[in-house]
Amino acid sequence: MSRVGKLPIVVPQGVRINLQGAVLQVEGPKGKMQHAIPEGLKIDVTDNSITVTRLSEQNKIRALHGLTRSLVANMVSGVTQGYKKELEIVGVGYRADMSNNMLNLTLGYSHPINFPLPEGIKGKVEKQVITIEGIDKGLVGQIAAKIKSLRKPDVYKGKGIRYLGEVIKTKVGKSGAK
Image (tube, rainbow, N blue to C red; front, side, top):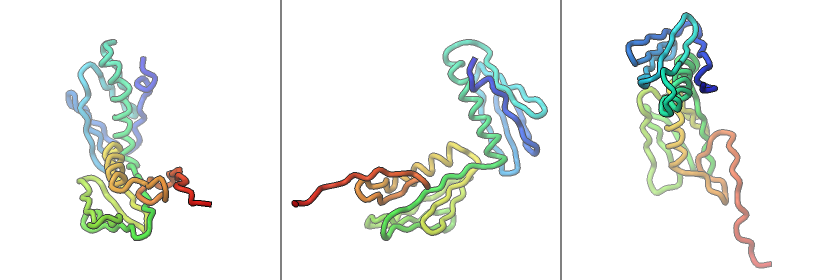
């Protein structure tokens, strides 16, 4: 039995769970999400908990057991609390601002970068910190990673976009003649 997959998911107040065939819908105060349950897994919904069980011991189904449970737990957590990633811009002349769900970045290139945020993702910029928020954990992380990849932190000076609180080890560089 999967250590992650056998754990029940606690459903908080205000969250509605709807299971139609192989599609699980979760609706809460922040929004609504749905996920297709893979064949070979069974979802049991009670008053305040969800359990995921597998119908056979095939390797493919065993591999999907814990994954499906984690995805459903992330959906329940996302529609109640939501997810947030914060990115920090470090560098002289590096700037960011938001306008009409479009993130405008000036990162030392010869042109500004306009990064459109997808539907369901909200962004805001305060000084040198970009905040990405949404109910889908995977999408929030993916968008934050794409923004970071526009200007990765430099290993010599530390300039670039990094996660808030991330520590960058800088290299020493060349030493001059003594």
